[in-house]
Image (cartoon, rainbow, N blue to C red; front, side, top):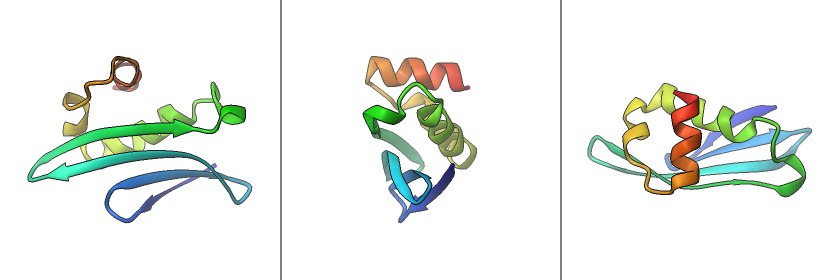
Length: 80
């Protein structure tokens, strides 16, 4: 699996040249907000979402405090 930034606001995961997941964020001053995490259904439950979140937290540790979606918040909490 390959994880790459797409601009400043999205992390994408690729497997065999196919985009399988995306993490969309917003940045404002020193705050980072997670807007959406999407993993294509056939690739779910393989740790791809967690890998994207870990990469995000490597670059922006403050992102763990700015997530309102309870499912995503739980995944962030497991990742940190």
